[in-house]
Image (tube, rainbow, N blue to C red):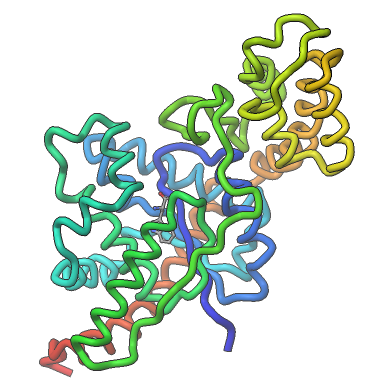
Length: 331
Ligand code: TRP
């Protein structure tokens, strides 16, 4: 029996390079080794986009296209839509009894998001509770391996707390603890050098960006504001071009040599940006091409079949959970 791998992304926009290094790449590498479930998390996207259901709906297709284009194979992995598994919503409600309000308020990722979205004055309950919903996503599939970016570590911790409480309270060994699988390159900064690459901050390079867009985003990248002349000594720390070269340039020795040269002085921003542009174009051109070749009909059928398969598995676990909670009245 293979272990279960599960993860997902909010359809609030297209996926970008941050998703790629943080988690997409490992999913592709791991999809054969594990029984894989990859979901488009529209319920979670709605927690802060509830007045924009049209945008969420449209982006379900965009995210699914990104999955297929990077090489997630629908014949191997199950790709599905979160909202279409009502058992997950049911489990979320039961899990709410196991989590305190103060525990939710302590989640550092949720805290940061609330601040970033200006929701600190009046916090929507649904948003605060999304980590509980995420725990239901994970446990209903008995998932043990969760490929996510570093910022999702608090969700995994919260999930495991819920798992332990549930199993103890109902005296079962039913729910499984899980572990985050963080991409080797960790967190990718935005092109502005401020915090992480994110669609809401408008500082990300999308997997679907065309050549000209990639070129102009690389040109705009934050480097070292004190490196005015080519002959000046340059800083490598916090220099986005070097962080991206670390993540994407295959020849690590060459990157070290370039860093040394840049720090010594005599190496300008133009050649390192050109090198990075070439790397990104080499990576993204085939993804862009694949993306353009999948029809809407095909994406729809992938999502539909995946959702049916996923739901059957969720229903099986939910039957056991209802029995453990003495909710199996009519079976
Ligand atoms: N919170 C994740 C994100 O923002 C999306 C997500 C929802 C998820 N449910 C999940 C990730 C379950 C892993 C497992 O990207």
